Image (cartoon, rainbow, N blue to C red; front, side, top):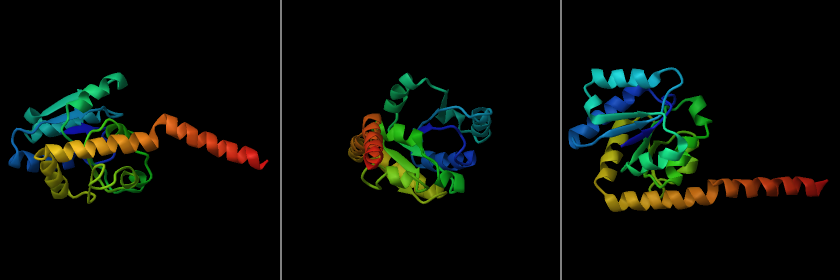
Length: 185
């Protein structure tokens, strides 16, 4: 399970609860955490994992240079994108989520803000009820046991995300908008 994060969009205790549920059903599951907080949140998270005896099932990769991210993404069977239902999260553009989807990683995300715009449920990823640990854990376990579904979600996500949000597509859209404005004058 990949958690690609800055540790800002959710309560870290939630990951502990989700991982406990997943490990109860599938003890060989491993959490790969890629990312670093702004103020040492990754160290706090590691201590939380240690206190809850989950550090044995976790690898903390820390900050990873962008050119190395594909290697970490490829190591994941699924990625989770937890997000508390807050006003800030409802208005965020989730660049990390777009990165995961464009790389073809099957993603399970909370149905908060733009996550619902980027993920078409059961087509390009899975959406969970915000804050529902049980729902997220169940969806993780379902995807971990279904390789064909993971592959289909990942490929659909890659195709749709690159077709809508690649820099080439966005640049052409912006250019058309500017041309439309200039042609009015």
